[in-house]
Image 1 (cartoon, one colour):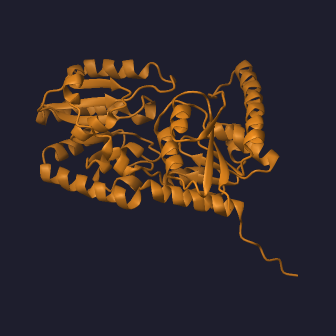
Image 2: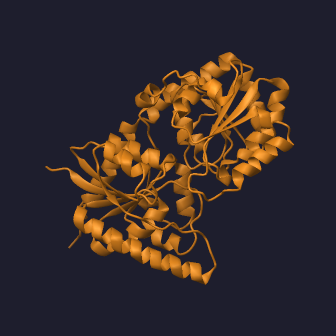
Length: 388
């Protein structure tokens, strides 16, 4: 039996958490079962997919933002039709048996079109943000939904999506490959850090819900007890949606007198090396859909200090693999960081438990197998008996 061609659609080619998770899934799929085909704009994602030996199609898609401007809405409608026409041609050429949308924006295009051409479609829901009209209506046009966490599944149900339509599949990582990316390169000197500095790593895009502000506000209290603590913020504004956020955070750090204790490292390809030298990972997000970076940190034996919100509690076990606090409460965040920094045996215990949890619950082979099982159920639904 020949493998099933599946068309994966992503609306951007910039690499962030959703794209890393998609690449991990594509790498983990059994090629004897699935032949993956990727459609996305030209760029890093397309290049990395090609390096995995995948067929890729260039698909420039417009991104949409909330607006009440009628002219902007009209422009969006024109862009949507153009994207639909382009995608229709790719579907004709690729002849997939199933379509997999990797984001809500991608599904705005794929959901409607898949129904028109009679191809089953699954939407991979990776966000906790409510969708505006008409995006919410368009995203309901799907056969099945993969939610990256129970929190996302609950959010979808609250928005009116039928819960039986939704399957929760946690993201997975190739932990061995992630660990192998630690080269031992001395990154401290490059980042301007001393050998005895305690590194608190926040690896996140500069978007408001990541709550960089709370990490900065926690730092003065941390420095009172741990004067060698340094906050390394790795990440940038990948899509250019919040150009004022990082300058605001830098200004706040200056106002609080901790600017020289914070390293704004930008987007880093050597994140595993930085993470390996960090004392802990800080995640102050107030609406984390899943928390892939927490899984990556745990795979390297690093304790996580995060928030008891969104999908993060499904990844980090409070008191077992990290410490969880109330979101938007910098003082509580600081106390949790200090508890780990001041207790090496606790840090080791949390880190070791985190490694075991990743290996047991978040391997990419598990996520890939569950996804393939969902494909099978979509393509070969059980027979329904009809009584005469």
